[in-house]
Length: 388
Image 1 (spheres, rainbow, N blue to C red):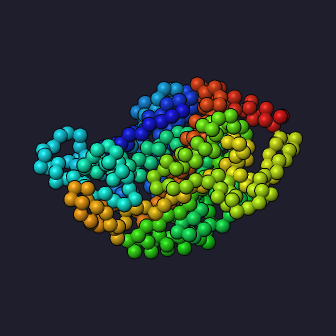
Image 2 (cartoon, one colour):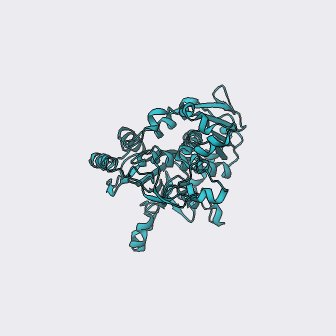
């Protein structure tokens, strides 16, 4: 499985093309729409979320509610394009109009300057439109398809918030995955701990009042992934490495952890590793899950626990200083529409990015031309693990 995305923040459409999804898998537009609308929610979101209603159009690869095995094309229209057509349209414009619209002032913390230098753009709108987090809409669409596949294989994925601006939710190891899903959906900041919900919202409101932004930590929790996915044989087949890379690919994410993550550096080995247990019904398992469901780059059969660190959004209403690339004069950075905190929404993005990597790993492991055959292969493999 793989996917490509296309589209600019204020362009006509966002497009996702997914290849490698098994045939005969149930897939409904409504299931993808649910994921897209979840991404738009959360305390601290900006005005853009009130302008756009992200709904998908499936234009190929699905017939009568089932996948065909051919590439799946998903399209999300940008409703706001009608106000940006003269700026973002594909047709040539006269030179005077072009000069008036040029963005020559890079914003600190964005891709503006680096992208302009790399691709030779004197107008940095050519960079900022594609590097915008709006692109994650297309990735959530791909992840929604992956989540449907995983659910059909008995694997469930949920994302939520662990921390915002240093305010940390208490540990929730005893919660079932369904409780995690329900609690996160009911929370305006997608946190599982009700005690920190209001302090997090207060911190977001204060950042907005101050013209500032704040970041935090998201967590994705996965149940049902069988042992042995990934491999110890080669560095580029380690599944935890792929997940960390996928998390780091999300806009504004600056760190990834599996299980205890960086906390393992502060503990003794006896406090980090998970004792192996066995029983006749379930086969092998671990007494604890400090390593987050991974050993040797492979899944252990325990729940997967992945964390991602999101920095504060760099667009500030009290902007930082920068330098105009044409005049070389110092200025205060321009302001595009922005959120004071996007961590709740980012947890939804991270959930879907992780889901796609897991679905991809499964299709690499098993014969996956047809979904019923894939499901049968997974069931057989799970039985083999129980009897090992």
